[in-house]
Image 1 (spheres, rainbow, N blue to C red):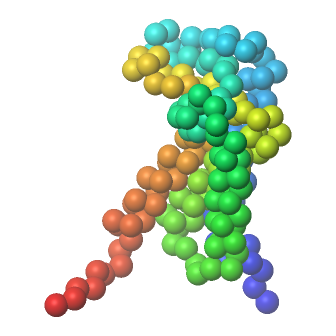
Image 2 (cartoon, helix red, strand yellow):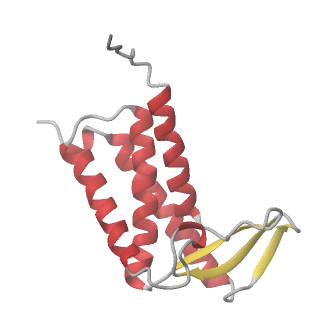
Length: 161
């Protein structure tokens, strides 16, 4: 009998690692920084800056009215878990991509349900980019992995004439 976790093992491992790294880094920031405190790792370029975010990734929609984001992250997370559990086997790039997206969605989703906001701390000041976190990075790398899976899957393309 094959266990369901054996169907897409890289998906599950990637998701767990992503959630753990996200929450570990957020915990370390919250324990060691005051709100809005910053530490220049590369002055003027890259800082750790502790902020909270009630909006979406990269502070989008942070002006309020985003109560629905917690439910969206829950729906995305449950859908991905159900698809990986009951659906077809993903290739390695898909497992990696969907696992990173699940880890990021759960990482930020847990924060939204528990605290009502997300802890952000990665700050590229050189280009004045919004402060973000490991979950946001996971989601974006996951999207890149899915693009790689789509364009470089090695499956021959069928042509209709």
